Image (cartoon, rainbow, N blue to C red):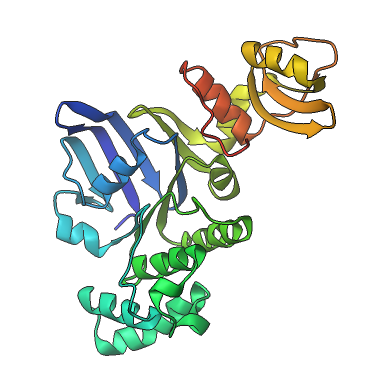
Length: 298
């Protein structure tokens, strides 16, 4: 069956509160990024796709299977939640073996597959270490190993790099890109850098609504001609913040090198520069009339 997720007119409610509003998306094989600030509805959408939360309204099919057929969908779906925990007193291998039993894998399948997966996520040398002794990055990699234990066609990861150090974040992103070969990998995050480094196709979710769906270059094109850079004094910075959206800044002694969005050049010393993903995201969010400071540039 085709590796495709189709979401049509999805509405999701928590009592009277509407968390998702008329969401429609088509997701094909490869890395797909779902970007949005905290509280935008990303985790709710991920839980619905993972069949952990029954949908309220709309239609969803995962590899041509309706999401209501939860048992069938779970056989082809792996999920790494934002808050991941696993049997702290078990060793890495014991935890994987136990989850393999729960996934219906035979002893022979577990014996073959678990060492391969631990090698792939760089945990083979730590297989006897207790889960509670692992670092944050190692636990996330173990989380990926358990999510693909049954070789799913769809992998859903929710905020996987939050709290990781820069080296572990790069390693984790590279692993996700490798896993995207031949399957759908959905990366849900509020960190623009993760999307820029891994995804070509993305959607931006804000206040429960999809406000952008397309490629990264198409998103960047929206901000072209509106990104400027200048070295200004710290006193001038406060005035600039009142008039423009600042996307990044670097202190240089008594001055600041600042990058900002503006429809036109606000002063002579400012130079127009090429837009990046973060600039484009901030420009998109600026149009929503809200604070887009969820970016990790600051």
